Length: 143
Image (cartoon, rainbow, N blue to C red):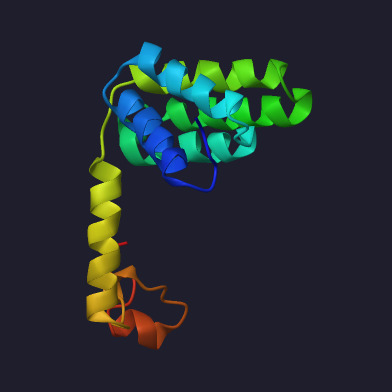
């Protein structure tokens, strides 16, 4: 059973995500196959795994996002079923890649801080100093 508009849709997406996060390529491939056999749009899956590469792997393996984008591109060029193999390869890559959510956490903290602090002026030493007056005021100092 796979209903793209009901709870099972989200459950299988979650199972794919958690299988990749748990470094279980066999389970990840199983859930991918369930999604594809259930009629899921492969480009939706490509988008999902690209987000996974940036969110769950990040700087632990910066090449992961390139693998997902390549799979996305291959599927757009070849279509099914050949393009599905590229997505399966990317899913396997992601499941076996090292994981790090450091960038995800840091960026969320930066966004929260930016929202909290509003429109603060950048510090003078980070600003360009195209005029003498700006240089005298410390703009670009030490840059």
